[in-house]
Structure formats: C-alpha cells, structure tokens
Amino acid sequence: MTDRRLHSRSVFLTPANAQLRLTVDGEIESWRGTRAVVISNCASVCGDELLVHVMSETHAVTRWTALVVWCETIIGQPVARYRLTLSLTPAPGHGVPAV
Amino acid sequence: MACLPSEASLRETSTVTIASLTRTRDLRVYDVSAGGCLVESREFLPVGTVGVLSMVFDGHHREEWIRVCRVHADEARRGTCLVSVEFLPLEPAGVNSLRGAVLQLHANGSPLRIRASLGRSSGDHRNSAVLFHTPRTALSAKPHVDPNDSTPSVDANDLATRLLNHTTRARPKPEKE
Image (cartoon, rainbow over all chains, first blue to last red; front, side):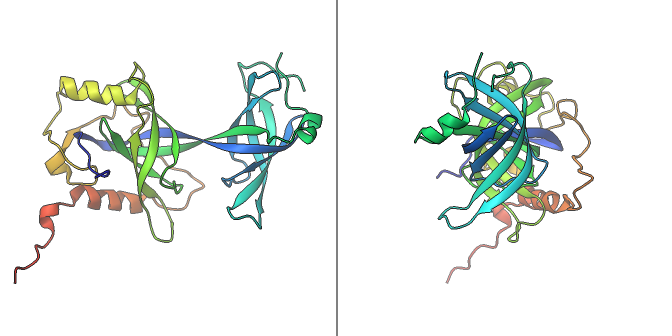
C-alpha cells in the first residue's frame, strides 16, 4: 500500500515554519522590457511574487523576480489556464540580461 | 551576456517559449520522518504537486524535494488544509538534506526520544511516533500569522489533533454474527 509509512515519525511539539517552492511551467506570450505576459496552469493573485527562469537564445538561464500585476482566466480550453501579466526585475546575482 | 527571447523570435518561432514560474509558500510542519512529513498549508495543494521544502531542522537550513500524496481539507476548501508529503529521493541525501538529517537523527537516537516504533503518518503518535521538542530548530517558535488572513488556523490544528490522537483501536469492532 502506498499510504503505509515504514519510518518512525518525529512530532514537533511546536509546529515548525517552513517554505515550499512550487515550480510550474509557463508559456511566454509576450516580453517587452520588464513586462511579460505568461500563460500558466496556476492562478496567481495580484501582488504575488514569483521567480521566473527563462532560457535565452544563447541557452543561458536567466532569473527574474516578478510581481503579478494582472491575472486573467482563459476561458474555452479543456484545462483552466491563466494569463499572468508580470512586472520583472532582474534577480540579484544573475547579471542583467540584455533586452 | 545573456539575451532574453526577443519579440521577433517569439513571433517567428513556432515552438512555445517556456519559462518556469516559482512560487514560495509558507507552511507549518507538524511531524517529519525519513519518508515524508505532515504540513499545514493555507493554500490548497493538489495531490501530485512537486516542490522544494526548506526549513531549519536540527540547527541547519535543510531542503528536500517533496511530492504531495494526501490532502485533508475542508470540503469547501475553506481555511487551512493538512497535507501529507513524501520526500522525493532524487539524489543521495547530502549535508543539507532534510531526509538525511532525519535519518541521522533516528540513527543516532534523540536524547528527548520518548518512544519509537513503526506506524502511519496519519496514525496515533502515542503508538507510532518519536516525540521531541524542537523550538530551537524551527525558524520561529511563534505560529505563523498573516495579519491579512482572517481565516483562523485553529481548524487545521483541530484536524491535526484529531488525526494524531486517532487510534485504530478506538474504532468500534464489527460485531460477529
């Protein structure tokens, strides 16, 4: 059975704080300077902070921090999808990519 | 210097240009084993969700890839939900591995250990868990409170208490005919 646990557990008497980083794919619909529109399967709310990894034409991965400024539901597809408008800032330590 | 996908290339190429979007969410961890842990999330996490869990455990920052395997949530998905996650052993447990730290802890034996035996993650901790107090290992001993969130986390606490106190022996046995 997959739900059987064979390891002994350790219970925190005080729940410990943790962070979960969830990564999903997004399709870049447009990218103008520090504004990008990305189609994603996951909805976001305005003000959400995301980390965007993009592979450039030179196959180098660039990292941007993004702020969700708009989230629009795309209707008419079998799976719910969302169009996210992002305000981008180059992530520190990864250089400033040329636009 | 790296270049971004240009507008022209986005228009001209027929292939879809992919980006990866990473979101960070705060969680609270109730228990942990070498195979996974039980966490509380204010956001519903579907079964199969994959991500990286990071926390301070045993005085060090630890990370582990996880996958959601069970979700205990209100039917209306109001408030917080309890999420059982399993560790994904994508690579050998390294120095910063949460899985490795738990394995090491259990191998060495905690000085605050009360009882250790095998059991289910959703079972009775009195039967199946090692209890230890870890306020120093957590990022903060204070419960996570979002001033903008009016949803009380007491629902998940109650649910956790019920789950942790639930015993299979407490279930009524079917009567023999």
